[in-house]
Image (tube, rainbow, N blue to C red; front, side):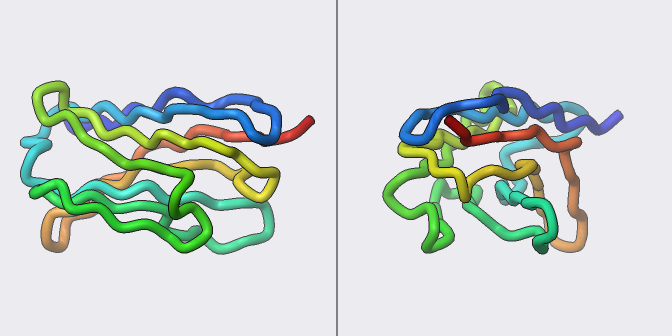
Length: 115
């Protein structure tokens, strides 16, 4: 059974940090491209960060220099380290794994940045 389980969300003050994790099971994790998306209330879901199977990363302009995506294939896990968080980063964050036409999604984890 394929599962993506996210963790690490929560409430943090502006300027703070969080690390999101997405643990996959039931798949060969290392052959999937991994992405983090987010969706704020009233907004479309947007791509935040991508890491390829070769470890090449790409980021949305709004998070460059603040967020870091990484993966540990031995643990079947992708991470999103978020630093210098801003209120505009408030959203539900989703893990996504892609392999050709197959797309897998996590259940989402809430990140709230507020004082």
